[in-house]
Length: 492
Image (cartoon, rainbow, N blue to C red):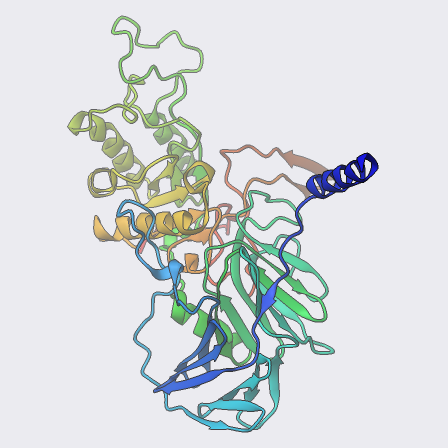
């Protein structure tokens, strides 16, 4: 008996020490119910439900609720009224398209005048066809989910190519690769600092995953697109690259048109070095401080643009962590509890001086966008940079900041909104240009001989514009300009 007890104890020890196995993914089973209402079709498979919703002849949505309860957290107001609340989808007034359906035996055929979505019954999986019967895409297995992820698996064509995913540095066509769609502060080759849950296929479609959850898209055979949430929600746009991109920006927001100064050379720096805080020592005005520099000193740099007939469109006068902005004596004007005329006047005067030299003033945002009425309406701020500290959480927080910064300029002035940001997401093209991040570069000058000059990368320096990809619908940030041999003094 003692030997038996020892064996049982050892067996129990092995079972206890063995790591818990992850639950097997679940997937849709056979269709157990079907409902049709106008342009919305609901398929039931056990406890799970799937809606197929047609928004137009060539746009539709597949929406899975594994527990039968449909939710849309990416476009639902948060419970906390102070929480980020930007929506991915901004168009909700599509005219209802004419649709029809039929039971083809092994599948339900859901049709518009341009496409047919086939919902196969056992197990429930989907395929997309054009009106002429040709296949656009087809699932090789049903939608799958775990407690934390949901995936779609599609057959890959022999020559099919995939574009998009937002800013995928160093990559354009993604066939045979896996891309990350997530917040990522990597601006080097292989990074994805402004990713977007949208991709397009040369087979003739684009797909937007309607989520703020991070994901991975593996463009192998088969293609597997996964996001970290227990629901599946995707919009499909049928057509070539141009058509699919057009439908995508119609749904999530048209790219904004930057003002002309936003397309010109920009200067970003901290003109507030050597400041002394909100309550400096009255007996020490900082005159002997070797690094003393105040926000109005930006005007001296602006004057050099004029003196050298150099194109200049805008200046960020506080581009550095903790820089803030100051008055002529270095008294800090942001960061304290008091906010009034004393604080805004020096910034307004700096802005007036810059504008007299045809340069617009901008502010770098570290922690808040709560002073826009004064900064925009009184001081004349016309550019907003949303940097890492502000958009750090990414996702809905970043998109909300983007909307707030852009709209704040338009609400408090007669100017066109202009913001640039890191960590964009689907919809960011409507409110900001996407920043590539800090880089280093070198160039060669030919003047009888070659000479190399290296430009070091610094966190506060502007960076070259990003190369737009299929999902980067907004213009890239033109933070470096080129001299065209003529003066750039006209504004519109």
